[in-house]
View 1 (cartoon, rainbow, N blue to C red):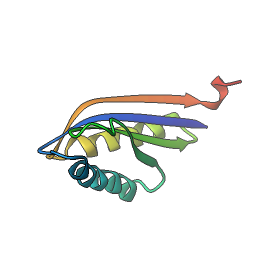
View 2 (cartoon, rainbow, N blue to C red; view 1 turned 45 degrees about the vertical axis):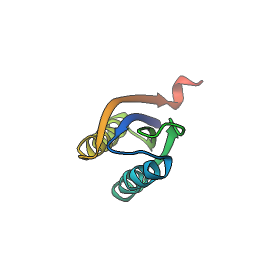
View 3 (spheres, helix red, strand yellow; view 1 turned 30 degrees about the vertical axis):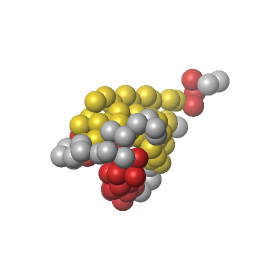
View 4 (spheres, helix red, strand yellow; view 1 turned 90 degrees about the horizontal axis):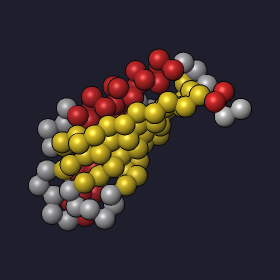
Length: 100
């Protein structure tokens, strides 16, 4: 079993309040959940900043290649949104055998 984790650091466009930030981030999270129903996704950082957001994604699979494929597809989905600038993306892959 493999667990893939993706952290996306994004810069939002013309956002001047935390309320506007929620209105910009919520559709991104909803689209990821809609297109990839088996993943967990949430805003996981920069909650106090207006124009920055950290989105965390997790996926579980029997194969490492499948985890990477799903995480890369999610990264592309977010990166191609015109209202968002993807500052960084970090992928990590965990294998249950590493813990033993």
